[in-house]
Amino acid sequence: MAGAAGRERDPLLRSEIHGFITYADGWWTDLNFEKLKAEAASRWFRPNEIYAVLANHERFKVHAQPIDKPVSGAIVLYDRKVVRNFRKDGHNWKKKKDGKTVQEAHEKLKIGNEERVHVYYARGEDNPNFFRRCYWLLDKLNLVNI
Image (cartoon, rainbow, N blue to C red; front, side, top):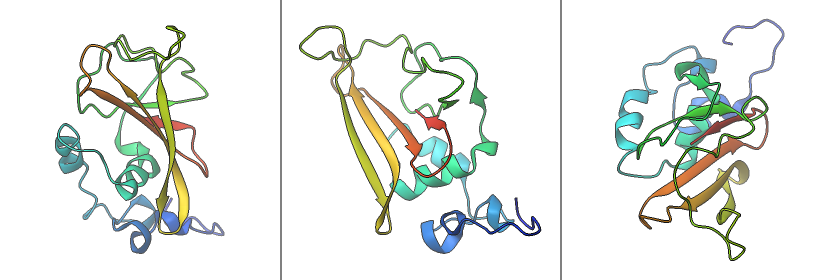
């Protein structure tokens, strides 16, 4: 939190790194989550936006159970340590050749010159233009943004 005595601030939470003023900076004026929520249905978030959402998870509901068939563009947060089955969302995802395991692509996204966000993508079986994107921070939180 801002102003915590004796606590060093994480520089990645600061606006000069990712372009947003965050909770750690003590201001919300430039962190427009409503705009991000509206844009989520039409585009993928940039790495700095993903980091901003996960670093400011207090602004979102963290779900205790998987959401059944979340709609395209939904921003859903889970704690990976609490909700182990967060991928079981009711959608039919493309499977690997074994026919059982969901086919996922895993990547690490950079902010600046450092890998900070892990992401994996799954494609819909029924609609190849429907994707699930799951993100989490490599350096701290167990929260997942889907």
